[in-house]
Amino acid sequence: MKTSFEFNPYRVLATAAATFLLALPAPAAVLTYSTNATMSWFDTGVWDGNQTWTSGDSAQFTSTAAFSITYGNTTDVAGLSKAGATALTIAADGTTQRAMDFSGGTISGSVNINNYVNIQGNFTQTTGRLNHEGSNKTAYSGTSTINSGGSIWYNSPAQLGTASHFVVGNTGELRFRNGAFNSGSVTLNSGGKLVFGRDGNNVAASATITSLSGDGGVVEGVATSTIPTTRTLTINQTTNTTFAGTFNGTAGSGLTLSQLQLRKDGAGDLTLTGAINNITKETSVLGGRLYINSSTTNFSSTDGSTAINVNGGTLGGNGTISVNGGDNVVLSATGRLAAGIEGAAGRTTYAFDSSSALLDLSLATASSNTEWLKFDLGGLTTPGTTYDQILINSGTLDIGTGLNFDDFDFAALSGFGPGVYVIFDTPETINGSFGTATGTIGAYSVELKFSDSNTNLVLDVIPEPRTWGLLAIG
Image (spheres, rainbow, N blue to C red):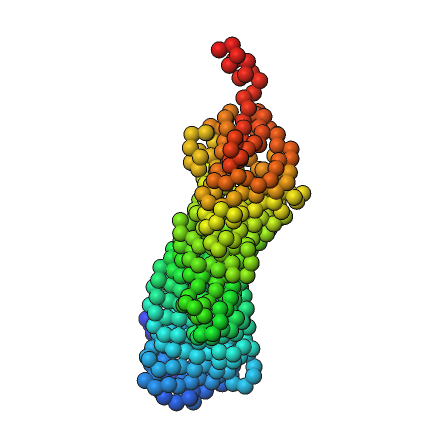
């Protein structure tokens, strides 16, 4: 029997295409859950015995009643989304750490994360609270965007790590409630809040973050119901950032105060341009440069006489540093002081509420350090505009015993030349004395002096010999 064969190219192509499609991995699914029961997800990758879960699938929870998830493997949840007013609780099965990846998800509702659940990934929190309970977790890594009334609360330092990044704005809130946290970077934009403490509770709450930046928002401590409690924010950054938001150092009144303390550390520059209200605990500049470009500030200390202690870093800026309570600004042996911003002409203004309060440089003067006073000098036209100046509009300058020319780092800008530069302008008689007060800047001989009334510290730039000769001929 003879069999005929007819070649059909369309059939071959169709068969090949079908084979190729079967070989492709299944596309990520969106699995929607509206059950009110407790769901269990174990190593089989099955939820409630009826929906198979593949790594990369996303979940949407829309239950109208509270429900919880217990899971016992490490399959990722890519793009977990939560909607609805009722709470979702996520817990690990047993006492083994389990991972859950929220990458790409949006949570608009209350979610409680219990022990051993390791949240990772970039996600958005809106109109609800992501509440991290307990500990026994791997540190969070990813970017969390908090806005539209959403909040993320951390209740244990073990839940957080330096690889985290929080972007908070538009009525969003990031809160560190209890303990000493080590977090990553925080970007705080208009309408956002970074908050320390528990409502009505005087437990200690503090955080060390790797950087602070943003165009607005508020940093504050929660008012306590009993006694004033210190909330410490340490900004330990190696990068240069600007933060335009507000610091609210105290909240409440009487015995319901929460006291916010600031510490700047790390080699990076932090420039503050927003209001700094009622910082009533000692502010420390431990590393890098803290530039205060704010016109509204209020520093003091309830623990001693030092409102700002510059101990290893640099304090400067083109703003006004207002100090209350008769407290001082003190440079330690390793502290540095800049007039304005290094590299450009500017002015830092100090305003003390008592004539006896000090800008105290005596410890730094007594040290063996050099070039710890930073001044940029251009033309003599306008102090604070063409050359650097430190203005003390109330209070006293104490330079210690033996302030030397080599304690200064003078940088000559365009226009620098002979004349008398008023580098410290003060209203009171200056405490202290000079050591070796002469030196050179470029081609010019210079000398540090007091003004006739001993209220200003000036730098006299002396014309070079050829100029003197020309003046004599004239």
